Length: 151
Image 1 (cartoon, rainbow, N blue to C red):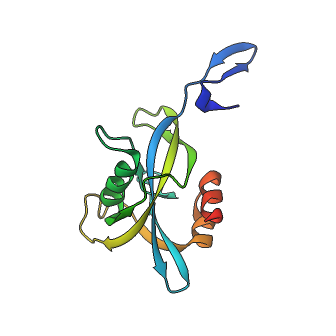
Image 2: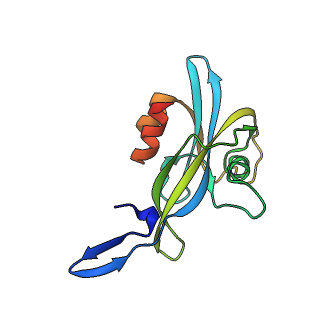
């Protein structure tokens, strides 16, 4: 079933309409490591899952620009953002109200130029560099795992 299309589902004989997924922007922060490309992952605030920096679209910004801002705020990354997404993944976000919502994160590559120690969410999240295969093994989301393996 394609949730992005406002799909219909029959549950217990009743017809229900499902909302399209909310759009988000995610940052694939890459650098050249000693053994090949490395990706920067951060931990989510509540469940401490490893994930890419990501967030909501921003007024008067492209999704690529929003991804670059999220990379700065959540991970202290500055770099060259590519304007076209390299992929996407869907996940369930639990809002502060406890309501689960489906989000579809468009992923934008950022070639890391600097990594700051002082940034807006410093001290709130762990961040770490991983080889692409190790990053694919550690992330919980299967679509993100596939995207990392395909790079």
